[in-house]
Length: 478
Image 1 (spheres, rainbow, N blue to C red):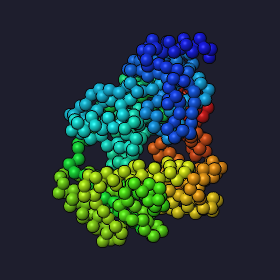
Image 2 (cartoon, one colour):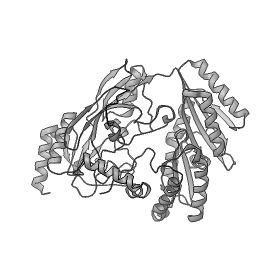
Image 3 (cartoon, rainbow, N blue to C red):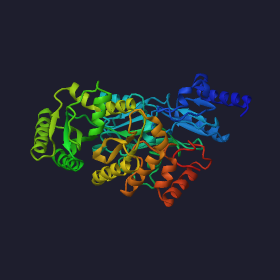
Image 4 (cartoon, one colour):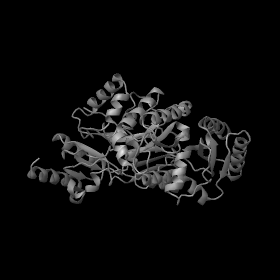
């Protein structure tokens, strides 16, 4: 593109969104690199529309010139889905100014928000209205609703409330042609043909640009209780999960697990995060974080957690139990899970990260088989696993034998990932539970899905975005 053509494009974008809200890519370098700094690209421009109508006009303009569009929310993704490629052909379309909460309907228990609303902002607005939006992520201060929808985000409370798809009733979407689909219906029953909503959720901006959503709200819990447990063996962890489901019922909102190796790593690399228990010498120790949200009252919650976890101790399902007796202690438990594990791994050095899901019943077998396989092929590697056991999602991270040996990861990372993913598929799991495909798992997706599945996905992409202008090079390779 010539310099004059670039100037003309920038001016045309400014005519739509206003001069301050359309800049050259060079003027917005933060939009050209992902948060893990694994991918860095170039862009003709970064544009920040202030309304759905402006998004539609921008898309129509760019589509008319055959210019690719990369939608971007809070840029907190982990698979490079919101980063342009290195060609410099694309325009980054930011949702930063689509940040309004349009409506809260307390009778219908819904909230309608624009795509650029931060998850934390959404949760605060719901709370102020006397309601609860249950999706909770460590990045909620910066991740946006549009990004959460684009990746079908999960988090720690999927066990009760489901992922973002389950929390969404309606969408507003700008198509690849610049048309607006007004699908903001707050309906829990709508059986009128194909469910377009579910096509766009999880599509990572490759089928349309989500500009707003109508989401479910829930009553505020009257009492929350959080407990940290030490358990011997993953088979016992699953027995504890069955016991917790039966004992707590719908009140069980989180069931998180941490491997002993990950727990010990926090002790060594991030001691500022307080550990509920001292590290122990039991080889197969696992740590479990349980949270319940009781809709009755404080006394009922106390009795419930005392009874269920007391029975777990009596029956050998847990060796140690610590129930948080203050808000500070509860926050410390969650800080360890949501931040301490990540901080410790970053200080230890690079590792090969896997965001996988498995049938819950297969988790123990997978962990045993994968550990044996990796030690056989890559002797000495260290495995740091944690995850949302209540929904089968493991964050399975493989580190070099020696801390800080990033060269090992650079050399063997691709082979390690392939070995792990092959075993995941053999156990009927998924190579991406909640992070998406982006550009980091393009080739892996082709290996792990059948030709029929890939063919159907390509037909959908071709039907909705025949010019391959929406986030090209993400999810599907053409």
